[in-house]
Length: 434
Ligand code: SF4
Image 1: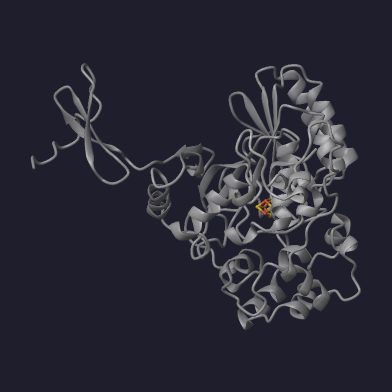
Image 2: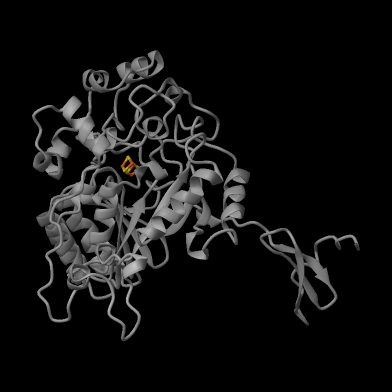
């Protein structure tokens, strides 16, 4: 079936008016005819010229078919200092940080994602999110290994039950790339550590879910659930779907942004079997919105999977309305609804990524009313200690004048809303008369 993006309108000069023939015969015959056999959609991912130049330089001899094979990308992840120095001009700080790093959250970057990064510039935004620096070794007050208290709310291996009707199901400790600000930095990329993920562990989590009829919503996360093979993922989704009181499945993933080639037609066919299934995509910066990502999100959206985004607010990386606005608008164009903007969690060694909560409010204020409402995510702080997500929004209530509620609009103008009997705003100082 032709997709919307392939059905381009004809140039203005040949657009037909009703009842009037238009354009040359060639142009006329190029329009799709009702009942004509449909063109097959492209099966391969597009590869941008910049990306092609990158892999010809650093992976000579690699074919486009290999580059577009997610298994190849996964195997070829950049994981060592030697591989990093082969591709990046590392700063002394990066070099020393990578040399002395041990334990979870290792370096891991798919060649595709590396192709989007500044190879000579340590301050390039995507590189900053994936190549470690010495700042990671500084622990500031308030920082914790498990700031959200997930371990405390763990009710079965990998199963976190904090909210009344939904659970977080940690399916794997593996990701295709490792983000330096990861909330689960304590557990990802560290096989053999205290956090184990296996079908035996899944069985214990499934037994808990079968017994807890109040759970109607399961969010699969990790690690990245889409780094699991199709068969195993299908098995797990099937088991979850078989639990009658579970109404709704969600998958949290960064893979469409860092390994879009993983969104194969067979994966999409697996996901499509388990509706209603939603996807929350972790997105950081407009540089991620490549033709490859456009293809991946189109495949998911065409399969009827509602797509939302989650973005972590990161100092010097995306904490600017001039970056956030095109990011949110670009997501909408790809049928991804901006869902959450998160204040960065205070994990150990994250102070260089964290900015003020005011900065998040400034960004939300720059979006609301200034662009499509769908492009405004909710801004939330995930409360340290297990308090859950707390939404924060610019305060639009100015005060009250008798029966009138005084509200501020997106341009700063104050307007009255007749609200007899209401009390909202009466605790605020009365605005000075103009
Ligand atoms: S993809 Fe998600 S789970 Fe994996 S390192 Fe990044 S933030 Fe953490």
